[in-house]
Image (cartoon, rainbow, N blue to C red):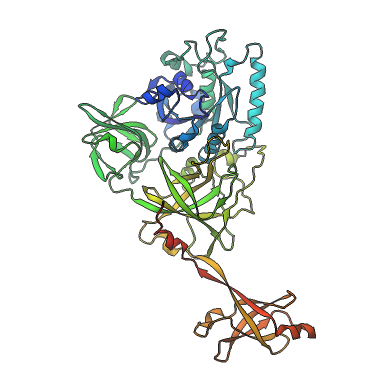
Length: 598
């Protein structure tokens, strides 16, 4: 059974060192193997390695009904080492989209730094569970170490109290690459657990200092205790979907694409499609961490070898069942502002839109229901959406209106994590925050699955500004190329238009004749029983209703809501002005189909 564990954190927090200390298996892209990464001394791309442990009985007892667990003897944890530099945020977002659980690596001395905060936001958006590895605890003096670990842990819990994970988040002190002098012996409290004996025998145990890593056993136990096991339910009808993160050629064998199976399954001999290249290829062979396999399914980390493919043409992308995925440059999404983003999310603005490994600039139109009666109690996370089988949509029978900006809920300290939140099934709804939608015009066509998660950001902002660049999150609920009838064609976005006229005469205390509200050729029947407002010179307003036409000169009859008994007010009515607010269909969404991005 394979679990994809994302390793995220600020640059130089020790993510790659921790992956090296944990791993028993290294892939071709593990531990910063690229020349550029080694030259610069930082992680520049996603790295993949793994460790395998025998499933302990106590772990099985925690998941007695899990369909895949009972038939497996081992769990393989695939470590997805994400870069920590701010300029590589779109790579980090792409990496986060393929993981099942997140491990946040924090420097024990520096705690939450700029990119740490953005990784916490990503965790809130995409994950249901999080484990914190407080790294480099060996840098504390041995006589002060326990005190400092407790002190720094309290600071972290205070920070996490304002997140969806709450202040009871597991925080494990570790030293992935302890300093040679005075490094303490690793704790033996867990050595009796037979789960870890085979792991210890096979572990790489790689540290640059040559000293054994500290806290690794405790970290593995914490991961096991807090993981939410994904359910890989593969149906025969599910299309094969494979997220490609690396591509390279092997002389005499072919081209290898490495990545993660997002859905469906694949076998040696199957035909797969590379939609971005419009090419179909036959699967020659497959490997999982250098071991040949004949088949793979959702969640597996995989290398697929095909023939006659130029590796330079595809760095990242998607491989699918032929003809199962189509491209679009116009998306309809349900969206929520990220509360850590301090700037307004304004209508008609451009953002970097990331879906999987694809990041493109998108022009966004935001709107909401005219009558805000909708309630959205859904957490945008892969696990929650998969578990609930949610298919979010839009109602074509009601009217929507554009908004100037998307409002966000305020951050609130979370004292207790409820059962519902632990399941990832929902989060508190702020009744003052409506459900927002966005029509997003992309600068180029990309391949998108319906119901895909997306993140919008301002990646062009100054990375030294120390502020969150992730603006809003969402889920694609309709694509422009859908059939038979795209949701865009049924969408009714209206805008208010103000028409003004004058009082022609007053017939009695409740009846008026008005003029100049419409042109003669206007079909006045459309406006029968519409409310109007009569404004007097002093600013007094009287509500009324259009009840019919008067003559053939374009005048209308108005019936006031309340009888006017004051003679002076009746006299001023003859000088009153009439206002009628009407809703007309907006053409903005139709226009953005033809917008050319610059």
